Image: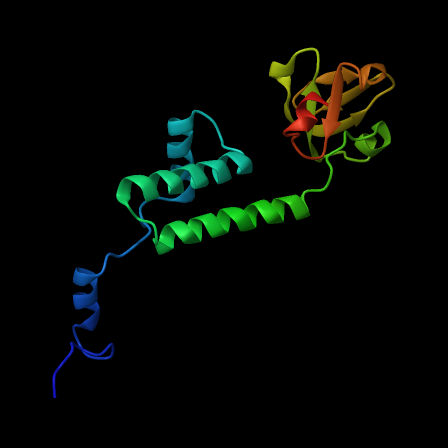
Length: 167
């Protein structure tokens, strides 16, 4: 009888497998926050889901060309995941309309994305702190005039993206 190697249950099998098969392991010393920071250093900002999908597809195409890896399981899996994320985003993303003033008044203590049309650099997440007679207040001390809502500022439940930014 010819021995074809050790069976999985035999001692030494795992050590032999590690030497003969490339292992994809997550670095235990790198936590998600550190990965995010490294990506921020590379790209200079957080990436949108669409940018990540585009990056995966572009990187897969480059890898296939440069590494001559046309039947690579990992590339196929990455592309399949990118397609699935794109499908889920199309299905799951409800329309992100600006909140009405009545909706905003009911959000005390909740975070909202405030889009400042007059000074876009001040658009940011703020915590609602209630409305007075003429102003809406946020926990960071910012106050916006209620009669300017929709003209110089808007509030969203989620940060706007894509066509919502200019809309």
